[in-house]
Amino acid sequence: MRFITFLLLSSATGFLALAQEIIWVRIMMYYTGGGPEVFAYVLGSYLTGIAIGSWWTRKLCSQKIGSILISRMLFLSCIVFYLSIGSISYFHTLFTGPIIYILVILVTVFSGTIFPLLAHFGIKTEQVGQRLSWIYLANIIGATVGTGITGFYLMENYSITQIIVFVFTAGLILSLFVSLFSQGSKQLLGYIVITGLFFIFVQQWHNTIFANFLEKVHYKKDYVLKGNYKFSNENRSGIIATHYNKEIGCDVIYGGGVYDSCFNVNPDGPNGINRVYAIVKLHPSPKKVLVIGLSSGSWVRALTYSNLFEKIDVVEINHGYLDLIKHYSEQSKIFKDSRVTIHIDDGRRWLNRNKDKYDFILMNTTFHWRSYITNLVSSDFLKIIKLHLEPGGVVYYNTTGSEDIVYTAATIFKHVVKFSSFVAASDRSFTVDPVISKSFASTFLNGDKPVLNGTKAIKNILSNPLPDIREQILSRYDLIEITDDNMAVEYKHKVKHYFNPEMSWEKMFKRLF
Image 1 (tube, rainbow, N blue to C red):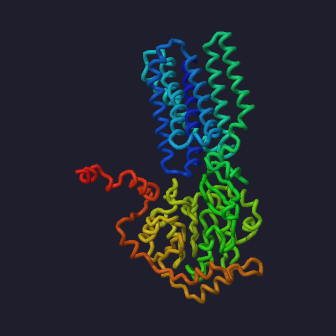
Image 2: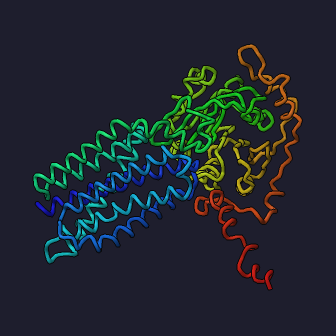
Image 3: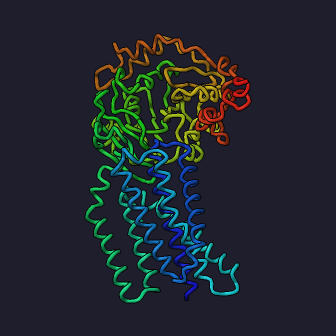
């Protein structure tokens, strides 16, 4: 029974450790706006903390006080975890950048002592290797379950600040449970009192410490100027929020801590929505359209103004966008349009499961430097897209300034053009008759009112020659094809920054001597 208890403790501590790590990743992803290096940095910080904690355990094991030491380390781990994240919220202008990763290391130092302590005090037999493997297996099982429950259940149903309380509370309860096996009545009473005081502290001050936590992590030093979100939604797919932007005069929607879109359908508006209306110059008569990524719903609403489209499928991985769109009357009209069907799914997975083909596929993709963007701009994904295009079909998506994205499109399709920050690719030439384009533009009506007539947007669209740039872009040697394996769009430029050949030691010495 004693050894089984240690197995359960190993499993429970593995659960807590991975739950804490997922929380840190979620916070740091939001803090950086989805930096691709975040997971590696958090994992590295965790492993560093575990290494320090394991080294520290060498001295701790000399204290022959049994499982009470494990209880203390669990207690300290939970307290430091809670206060570290709380300090980021409360002192958001002080704890920034690398300092946060130092906090991650500090938290993990205490939790890093627990597994060696379990092995040291839990194995009282000559079968050391066998017993150690069982403790290790239990720890891995707990870590796996912790990942699943935290990532799939807790983050789907609770806010990040609520999850922090859950994990903190679970750790304190576990610590108190362990203490029951080792302390005398007086010591146990004192331990219960201390634990109770921390429970009371959290109940009384949690909402104050973590007030507007996401806004502080997002805006950082600009929080005082920008204030609180208007609406927000948290689920396992991410964190999204809206906020009124005084500078551009509309509600902005943020996805994962970065600009996502703006609630605007005016062709001359501030969110560059003129790019979606450029469809009149890219395809003569698209009937079936697929939109990957819903965001504010403004782009889909713009498409619904034209009766030329017979079918508009939308694939969005985060159902939270639907809840936010319901607060905006114009964008929420897409839910009543019979031509619009919204699928909550991953874009690539949905395409692999469906055989439908489209005349036009639109993706207002996020910034090219963000984590996981490779999934939507790699040549591997474009090959999947190509299978879902009708003959002469067009894929049209945001490059956010990355020429590598344009280059990748040119390796898959025969014709490539650019409009603003967007690239359009097809195996059909982009030579739409100007008369057809004007006629197409006239079909965009909001009720009886023409949407595009007399706007700067349509004048710019119709006057843009859209030259084919495929051969030109393929001739450049400074660009590379983005694949699922190299993830070049996420890491290429940062690698160049740190490993710039012009800044090599060899060239530095040549300049010196």
